[in-house]
Image (cartoon, rainbow, N blue to C red; front, side, top):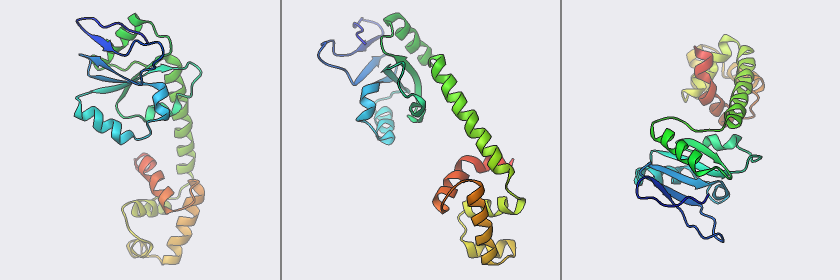
Length: 196
């Protein structure tokens, strides 16, 4: 990206051809721009989130994304509002930043298509897993997620602790997890879907 500064809305980056900017500030847009190459260095979402809050950035945009790059994991970045491929022309870049400023998202169609396919596959897997759960197993999962231990779950459901362990063993198999921590993560993402 090599965009010249103007007196109105502009992007400030180093223009030295031997230097690759990892961060840019989109002046007057309140958007933090992060170079795709910097993502190998930056791994802490919370630090980026804090930086954005401290500096008044309303959103994050990642630029210089290779067209053949792995973009599926990029959706995890906090307040991600847009992606720009390598070689994006200045006019299209500015158009995207203006759209982000107006509260819109700016993602290439191929990116949103990939994300949607991933989400649908995940939804199908969750549906298959949750359809196999019995009412009693769903109750056990809800109680586990609420923070109760096996003995308290047993008391609540008027069953033995051994029966609770059997239910949990079957549930873990059905939702494809290996331990309580993984089950709690699964519940965090999926329990509200199966409770409705």
